[in-house]
Length: 364
Image (cartoon, rainbow, N blue to C red; front, side, top):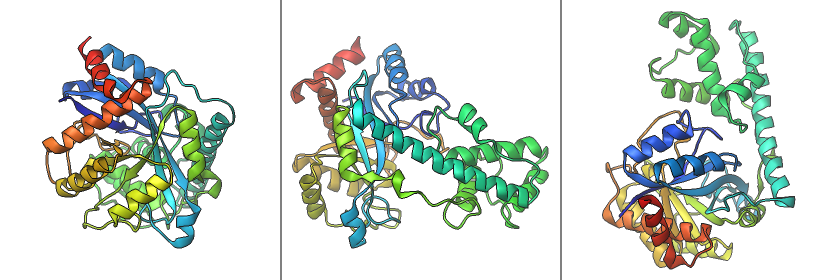
């Protein structure tokens, strides 16, 4: 059975990887032969993903991710798959057309929501510069430089955190000097992270300055969140399968309001026209992941797994759970079945031909 990772972010949104070749070289080295690009609001990486997968005899899946809003859940105070914002709902699209076929009104809506997301980060950058001026940091962050040097067009707040870390390193030559500068920028609070752990430093910058309560925080404009039904329409217009990303159990074993009753959750998703779901496996224990994924398979859902890699931490691509270094055989089988279904859909083939298609591709 071939290992699959169906949800990987790339530098076309924000990623732990410096490049697509780096990500795919890691996948190949770890024996992961089916890989899915899954960037926020972007189809821009598809061509490179396809070409680089072809060089390595990897099977590419073409996916996308959105943050949508379900007004019914918001009004009822229901936390869906964002544990802090009722109604806010992450949705993926799986098995989109390649070459890209999205056009017309749906393409414009995708472009608009991407532009709105970028604008929110630009406002955050401006507010961050006001704060840097106030604490006499001695430098400012150029939004255009961040866009041109750190991104492929989609700009996330994590890019600002990276830019700030790089600026501190450029303007303070020794470790103690950097510590003093961080303390000034953090309003008198010392940096807790080891400066050598860049992922931890960037996460701390983001937490202290860019999230709610931070000096550079800018609330997201409601225009950045399309209605859930609209996102589903865009995904379908692009040839994809609307897919619900489960959070399932968190580190304390808790579930969101929407996901706590699995039968009710499955029924609601079906009513909303969603019959595909995915899990980021490092979030979940093996027991819960097997329980949820098996149940959803039995309910007729396509189920796939991924790792995201949308933080600065460069972790393995081969999947594991929160309490095990690798997936159980049950989970591997579910993930393989889901990948075969997505592959068949992507190539407009009967579902039973997906496995043959993947095996033929990776054997060439």
